Length: 520
Ligand SMILES: [Zn+2]
Image: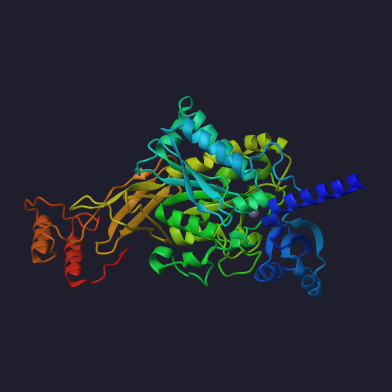
């Protein structure tokens, strides 16, 4: 009798302890992962519009995350949902061997940055809902100095139940640092690129093994949406209402806008493919939504896919790549926001068909993705690059960079002045447009296969004599230059060579009249 009481007490205590330590988990509402037959693409759109997350689709059936109470609604709509699992998951071991949990990941990153203090920094972008840090490891040759180098980023595990990418990001960070001195290729990447890696964007979701964050939001549906939140670019269009968003989203948005990322990718699981923008251009699921950089972005996606044999030889996705909307439309995704708002080309990489496979496969997956990760990163060194500055005081000028025939701008780094416009080999006309400055043209620029062509951009307000006024004296100087008289200023203010268009541009500045960006 006494013994039984004791056991009961012990049992109650155990329950209490377990209950207390998993209080956060049990507070998360139950969702189901269901499989449904899809008869037409409108059904995919409808599912997403209800706030359910379509996670994958193979042309016949889709896997969808739905709140438990939505099960009946789906049935009443004629779907026959088959429950595959629950979210948060009860079947996964939280951290099987081969994976790092949040505490181990933090330790790993601290140890790594302490071992390589000359090449790396560990930075918190902010905290998750439950107070975990969203870590970024910055790897570059002078980590405390903002240099004339393109910024590149990898982000993983926006979905907490897709942790393979976290492990590959840790492996990549370690690989870059360990091989810096011995491998000239790695040394070049670290010296020439400002590399940022965020291995775990959704640490609460990872700890709970849920797709969602601790407020039950799917973070890859929580960025500004097209066209309700924006139909233009952030920099042109005003504030994208950061404060109303989930904390994890706020931190990523602020960080992206403080920097000038040129190229990036974010890692998921549950499929094996590079998914590229747009995910949403207002059209239906199953129809291509190409960006103005479609050819370039398909080429970039292939630079990842081609070194991953499983991905490249996919029977579902030819060449291992797909346009986002052509697969299925999602709204509020991270990649479209990156591209539309900040000019950064971002792709969504699905690493493996199983979201949370046994840890013994992690080294195999690292082997399958290592060359892809390096080769994709190397692409950031292509295209056209240079510094954009005020020719009178050499200060950087924040500028929009345009390519003739392409509506997608990129921006330069506001503090350093460097711009990086990724382009495939060809000949291009570029224009550089900044508030208060005469648009500057760089015509017939040859882009080679390989490292970027450098074009420096000395912008002019039209104030040729640097007396802080734009007036007749400046127009006179331009006229004298064109007449061949000895004048000690560079009067080619529009980049088209010394000609009457320079005089016209300065006159227009004195009149505050607009100047055509790409004159016919
Ligand atoms: Zn995902």
